[in-house]
Image 1 (tube, helix red, strand yellow):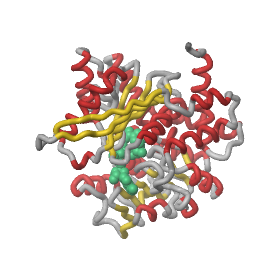
Image 2: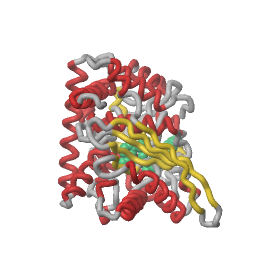
Image 3: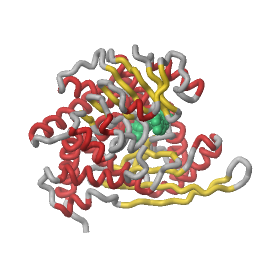
Image 4: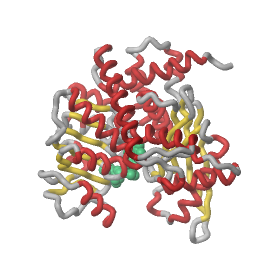
Length: 418
Ligand code: NAD
């Protein structure tokens, strides 16, 4: 993974690239390239042995022109201020690409959560929620899970917020467990959109998804669900990886069995049905029809991009391809379905969860999946319309053209204050 690509600079260069095709003034574009505010926190908690430890944490509220700030919370040792800023910006353009009424935000804590007990993580999450309390709320800023956080952390944040506020407000966070006000279908939503857009793109490009070969980098929530759903469409998941390495099987894995093995052992490496073990780089450069990067940013940089042989890439992860790598892939005819559409299922079902929380009326999983399918297919159609109308080089630029125009319209029509 490239150490040098700064994700915030990647975001800004993606916006600049799309802005050249738009009739939006330079000063508005400049505003749309920077977060409205970023909070940096020092969270000090007591560890189980009685000692204290300080953790650095962030929350970036990038843009609220189209609705409340919305975005996940990441627990990872590599979290930086610029990474959080970039991720919060991608949320703005993601929500606009799928046309849901949110702005964008993101948060993170610099921590390797595997080194801490559940009780320590609970104290840290509650300390974080306490700091965030004045800045969040169902009409203000709505956190959600991201890497290394999930239903458990969202339930703790909701409980901390409701306790301190003396209220019931399940819509303050999304991605909760069902019994704490979560939505059916939320856990699968990111992988579901990743696979739905891949299916649409294959159809658009005149290719068959049935029988296609697929490699998935990252076997967490987004990766394993993508593998499972693409397998259900009749594709062969020939390679998967996680942070410990990758595995290959020419005939295709049964995704569920690989997941069961990972649940037991903590990794996909050593899975008995594999023909071969692969490095991270080998996974990304395999000759497959579809590649799904579902780990972290900058997985494909300019050193790997020339060797990528996939026909289509559906970005389950946020920012897995650097701008330089993107140019190389476009020159080589690799079609990339950008993260701001491909993984937008997560935030779309978060939106459905929030709607259900506000109405205190809950939908079936079938309804959630049907509504999600409609949102994603409509967004893919808007993207390809723009791709053709503006004669653009990449799907990514088309998505940003659609999204920036929507955010700029919302800003300009509201007028400026003060
Ligand atoms: P997760 O923590 O469940 O899974 C991450 C996976 O990536 C793990 O299997 C980990 O081992 C693997 N990984 C880490 N470094 C790797 C490397 N160098 N090579 C191969 N694998 C590696 O996280 P997640 O929720 O699945 O998120 C993955 C990506 O999807 C992130 O970029 C996240 O921002 C994005 N995303 C997730 C959601 C969601 O709803 N979960 C929504 C939108 C976007």
